[in-house]
Length: 299
Image 1 (cartoon, rainbow, N blue to C red):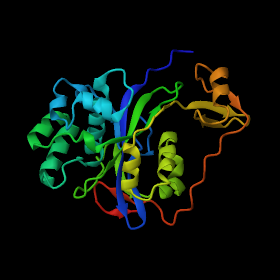
Image 2: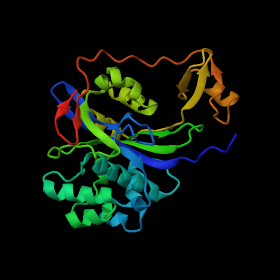
Image 3: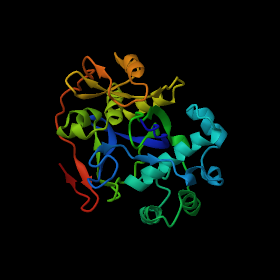
Image 4: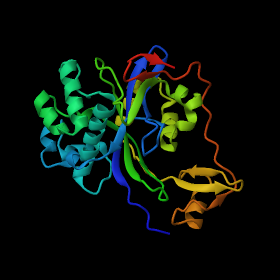
């Protein structure tokens, strides 16, 4: 078997806000033409770029590399990577859904829209835009939630830090029209129960499930900022005796057997049956996505 692809550092952000019926999280619908996870429902995020840990990026951030390393507790081998993960999370939020964290009521909407167009076009970097707009990169707005690594049999692998953050109050979310075609503020329970559930990647589904015990965004942020051990999750792929694909986590029965039987992660190991994730309560409405062109709610 060819050597496993090395995972690329990446960041994903759960943008949170509250509504009368409870906690909402922002989700994107990826383009059906996307090479990676076409049509999937995801949180805004992407790979860490070279510019995210450039020499001058620290001067634009709300905290130093050392402070980010200490606060985020990601266990990175170098103290620069923690800050880069946070910068990538902020950049991807702005690129994919147009939200600049930490810019509430400080920057005109027209200026933000122009900055986003230039960032997407590649004519300006996030650090240059931060200096131009006189708004620092609000890395402290992010709190770590979980840490996932793509299974070793995947062609494209990512070492992804999932963050949580409060969404800006005065900025509307909109899809970029390229990687993402629509956006929606949804209750986690609705995202899990909707007919679009099959479009949820495994890590996204499990992350939504982790939000179910929380009533509001404040309680999520409080939990994320509480000192704790955040283990890196390494899913393993196997097959049931019926031939169905299943994904196992370290706490699942059979995980250690799969590691022993299939150390290279080919997905060929057989387990007696697929683990049964908890079923969310029934949803009372479908997801509503906001189209980036018409800016109208559609179901």
